Length: 234
Ligand SMILES: NC(=O)c1ccc[n+]([C@@H]2O[C@H](COP(=O)([O-])OP(=O)(O)OC[C@H]3O[C@@H](n4cnc5c(N)ncnc54)[C@H](OP(=O)(O)O)[C@@H]3O)[C@@H](O)[C@H]2O)c1
Image 1 (spheres, rainbow, N blue to C red):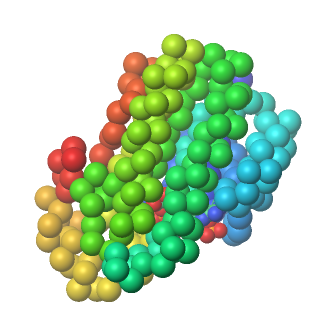
Image 2: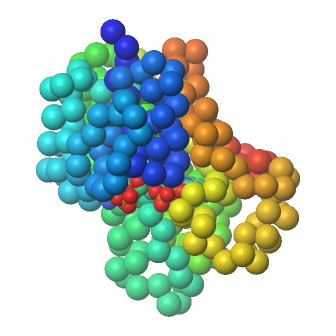
């Protein structure tokens, strides 16, 4: 039987490319998403990851049909940028609730299945700015750097049960999220990236497929940058 991978937010952007890459690689692929259409071959359940009961119900429904989740790619995330002094409590808390607590809700439910199988791959989509920081993104970078601590604590807690937990840290990738940036900001970012270009979502997907593979069974608690050299591991 093929392994079951669940990707959150596979309806667009990086999540969509990750889900499509797993379909291409022959996995059983499902997604928790709150809107839109999924790529061909991806099974879906509607849920907002800020809602614990909805997340658990979506996992239950997808597992009843397709078997226990063996690989989780926690991809869904948002930005609500603003300078520190002007950032509202709501914009700070909303970003943390989706990017950090939402990821936690999915990880907790997925780990329940993984422990029973004594196999699991937890892949958290962080960001280069979680490591480097970025003006206007105090909320977002805090939420993303926290995923590193989460992956490392998971590794220490359940690493002996065949479960790995890693973070992919993408740099600037062309999606709706970065399309919102002003043109001159995009040009400044491009100039600062050693590769001199934004990345493509399928370049992030390739890293996820690797971390899910049997070949990556001894890689855990790591942060894998996919950033054209922007972060240099920081
Ligand atoms: N693009 C980049 O340059 C970049 C760089 C580093 C890291 N990342 C990270 O990569 C991940 C994907 O980013 P992207 O660029 O593909 O973003 P995107 O195009 O804006 O897509 C975000 C995805 O997350 C889903 N989502 C957001 N809030 C959700 C919620 N409460 N419940 C369920 N799903 C929710 C969205 O669903 P809806 O369609 O329903 O809104 C969508 O599927 C994010 O975690 C982001 O922080 C992106």
